[in-house]
Length: 104
Image 1 (tube, rainbow, N blue to C red):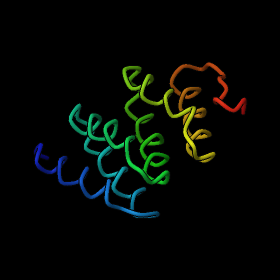
Image 2 (image 1 turned 30 degrees about the vertical axis):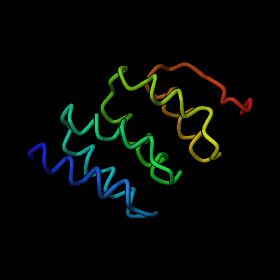
Image 3 (image 1 turned 90 degrees about the vertical axis):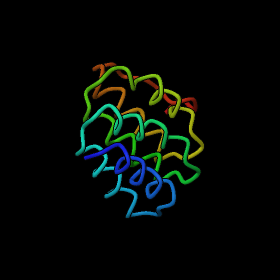
Image 4 (image 1 turned 30 degrees about the horizontal axis):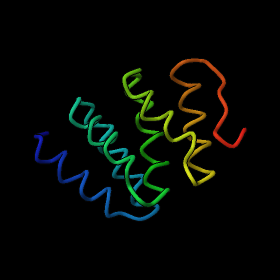
């Protein structure tokens, strides 16, 4: 897959709604390149919490601790679902229990 494909998928992800965002985030993770991982990390800035939540779940698949700071920022997300996904992702990547900004 070429970088242009990753860029196209990222643009589709940012514009997507649930449940399509889950499928697009999965497709990016399936690519498995650093560019795809970067596209997912950048997509954590999306306005829709469904996108952020889908992305967090897929970033764990890379098993790369370099994504941890980006995921940890989501522990203070406005959406409960996203905070819980971030909490689960931190545990999956580190084995450490953590709390969200709201003490969850």
